[in-house]
Length: 408
Image (tube, rainbow, N blue to C red; front, top):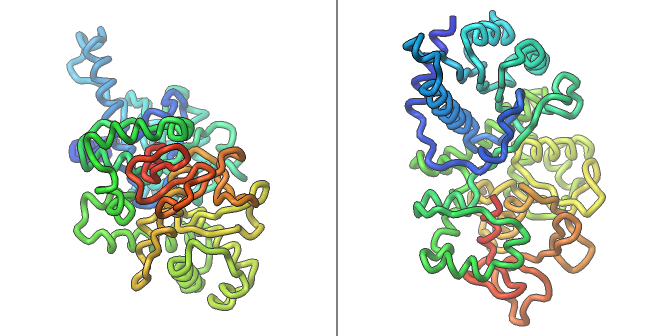
């Protein structure tokens, strides 16, 4: 039963060559027995699982070389396996049954893709966790799947992590081959000038920044000649699968969701006029707010709230989730300020809570760091930390915007 899966696994691992080690790989506690990797479409979740498979295989091979068992057996036990739950095999066989066969054959690490396509996935994962004490399961999940909220099967046992698209740092590593470490927000605030000066002795980050904003967030830029077509495909899949199917919305409402997304592409970043949008997509205000939340959950939008406020209240402003998506609006003349704000939000909210503020500052992070975002340096200077889009090397409160792409 396992042989066909191992053949597929061996082919995928042999032909998977991740161009970069993702920072998330070092943030996960791999000793946990049930790990979820959530991520939007197109950010490389499958490649991430296969990269983990390679690391497990390498560790197992090293342990095998040192073990006494090698003297008794010539073939190393197969302890790691990647499976895709869209395989028709799982229409007649349960995940628990499969995991049992795998463990009996010596399996210890099971990497699972397309989890949402399997009925009762959370219950089955719980049973695997409880029954097979030596088995470590890593599965990828759509961002709209509620793994902890309202999920009694997994809430107490799953460790959840988020995989994002490429940061600007990762993009530079891919483009230049340089070894570049990430920075904390505090390091950017206090050491941005010295860091930027050192890096600029090797490259000018601004030579790469505009290209990143247009096509660097999604790994597809390395593989597809028609990058825009691929991103549009991913955005449609987010609507048709992540929102429509997983959220169990009637297919007849898909045109309304598509129209809503087009309105967002045309206008973000912007405040929300719920009445106007509701009229445009022919639905109620409450349903419109629900749809906006679904687009946010699917990682199509980012919502900016004032401190202490959250859904179902109306956000202060709405942004596209990343700048690559923002550029998908045909015919729109983009203002650099809008793109720069979208980039700043997308980079900082990975590790920091970002809110609007009633003060003059544009953003507040973690309730204590106040920031502005500007396309260029103001003539009178900056009275608070300001991320500046066209700045190569900063000074004092004037911080290059590109540096916030080094947070991960």
